[in-house]
Length: 388
Image 1 (cartoon, rainbow, N blue to C red):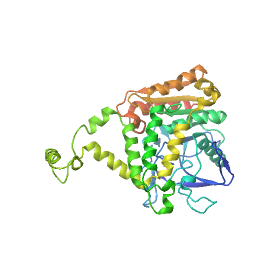
Image 2 (tube, rainbow, N blue to C red):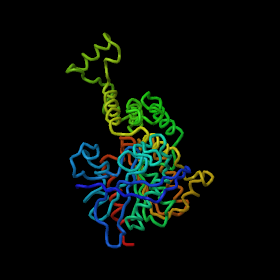
Image 3 (cartoon, rainbow, N blue to C red):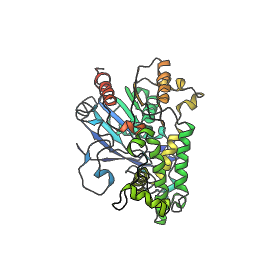
Image 4 (spheres, helix red, strand yellow):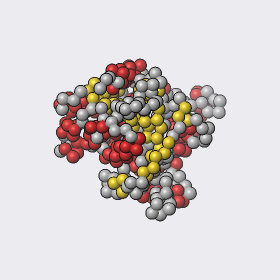
């Protein structure tokens, strides 16, 4: 499936929840499938922290851009004949404000200064993203979504859609997500942010003006994140305590080096893997974007405006829901999904819940799992795709 991104420009100012106003902005979008005559088969896919509009397929160009060289991040979920079947549904992937994959963000120029926004880019929230996405749908002539779906932070956006625009969402699919972050999750995000802002090349967030990039901080931030996305079982199965082969030496020879040199001369496979992931991430992701998006994660809490009552917050929702969680996901545990399920049931909303016993941790929502994909496929075939 070959896809081509399209950029939508909005000149109407966008008032953000934090009080700032974006005078104008752009959103990069990809679509898959065909919008039907009455525009009733649209499915909006919301992305997580380091993902983008490139949800499925491949780009036609052969440029050096990272997204052009890779398949969409949910390519196993979305496409012809897949659980979200683009032979039936018109799927929209949108890159959020503040991102670094084309939509207006910290690497773009601030019209007031003519220089990159950098750290001056305004704080954005999940609710702000939903407002921008709603304007996008208006521009596309789509009044009602057949479904909105997302995993992790994308699931939070899907949930927010049902509260901000309940009349525009018929179905919501919330995967490996939560109604807010636990203190532990906020703590992990803060440690990652501190790694970035204390990098000497950060320059208060205006590193582009100094011709530098805080790659060291980004590497550490990514390593921290990656640890939390995997389960202990998967890490032990994939890496255990195995040592990485160095210069053709076998692990026993490498272990012997530990006695002759410092411990830095020996790398466990898990260390090598984390360093590789960190290095790769630091080459394509923007540090200010990382700060913005993790803050949006931290701030999301629809129950806050309702005295802490999630049930009261979800009373506005009208959509039919599917929630999916994974047993070894300790960052967005099944208990958090069950909180949403209970609040919906307390409001007598129609909800299906699937808890998958999978060993992969939080990353399970991106991987192939026959039970998980069957649940999503069934929901789209028999609920989302049912006659209205």
